[in-house]
Image 1 (cartoon, helix red, strand yellow):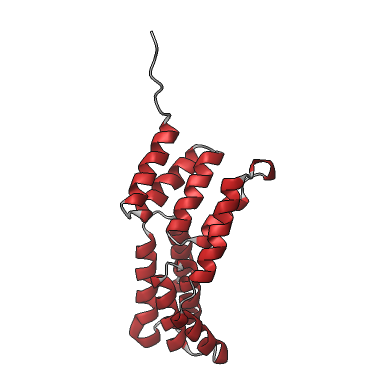
Image 2 (cartoon, rainbow, N blue to C red):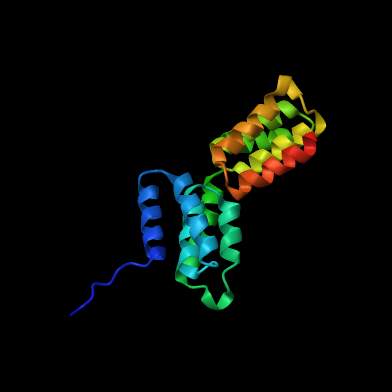
Length: 180
């Protein structure tokens, strides 16, 4: 009697995450694959799927960090494709608005209004780490800038990333240490 090959739990999680990505639920797919990646002790197929989901979510720094953990001997065409996608998305991800605000901020780094506008644009482009770093600069200088607008924006950005996400947790700790 022949036994039908059943997909492994690992394959099932990748399939489920792919389905979530296809439906536009990138945050759920990233969370599912992050958990699978950690549970699998960072197996290559899960690592590549997780990095792909991070790229889809425009979390390019995080995706690059995950891909850099792949051993040199295990790097293959898929790894190189994902690294190339990161570079292309970085180039394409700089909207004219973001570039203009970056130039304006470079001319006057103390201009919190421009820095917050830049953070908003970066957050809208899913460059969450960069957005949060800019907001931290404002909060370190003036915790109640513009009647708490920077803090509200910071908390909104963390909420957008999603509860339980390591990036959100990292920046929640940074805010907590700044405030207390």
